[in-house]
Image (cartoon, rainbow, N blue to C red):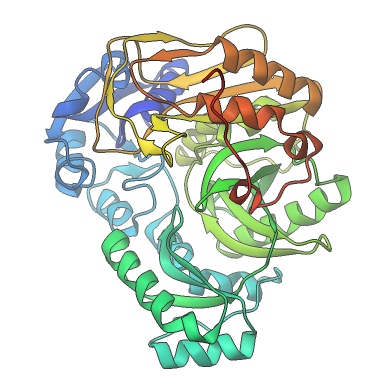
Length: 449
């Protein structure tokens, strides 16, 4: 049995995990860089260990310091959250070597699904529909051009170790291929330490739909329905909702079955997502599998009344997943509140929060680690809060979100609240007729100036 969990992360997700651990009667250990000593995840954990200076490479990405912190505090498990080391197979393996339970899949599964070209081959063999593309890694520009010509333009060049929109470039013509291929490779190398690329057909105007799954590593896998993730800027999600306004019961059943089949094929352990692109003809294609808890997991929790972090921990303790159908009840929307200036190309806005008043009321949830007086450091992701609402229908959830956004006060730094306020009023968004290119034509207006 797991008794004490070290959370190898920071901020909102670390505090989120700590809360579930305490509800389960488990002890927690927070880790923090010197700049994060005043974060709420440090305050509310049972123990806390400083693991280094602010740069992530010297703190949150250091295997040795994570393992040392676990050993000195007697933690018998590590929860990686999302980002940082969450999908690092070598870290999962090192935890195994030190007899510390990694709360997530074993290293071979992370490695298999982290290589996006290999994951595509694996899912194709499991019977999932896949986007036409190169067979594995493309070694050079010449081979890439050949693959693109066979597939047909437009194509998208992707990093095999990619994520968060980095190492991805759309290529509209053969003349532009060399430049975009080199740019994607350089970005992938800088972001992931691996410049390997593959080429896929670029589907214009798709919906980005992901299926939440849970497996126990013993052959049992269930799904929790879908999340709509098409509101994106440069492949970075800004808003998610569940269920999707375009997915009906039949499509949900077929996508869910495909996701379960894919996860079963790799004997999946823990929570994760199988991500699909949905085209205009309602055909869906496997895109990738994320082997971790997702930023947007709260919308699924709200419509299923399930604690996904608790399920992660229970599976890590050896509990089996009971085969059953999870039903969705109501509608949930999540707005990511980032410390960014939406009127200045979403430029980061670090600084001190001078006033902080989170939204409240029935059906409103705020996941955050900040407070009035908190200083947002410039070293990490700019997300400072997640505002989640739930109501009986999508229309009522939108109205609740409008009220909650109006009530959410953050002063001292710029945030994405004005963007979300205008998004909620957009006719195309309200009608549910958007796709992943929606924000390319979305015009943000300054109000009252």
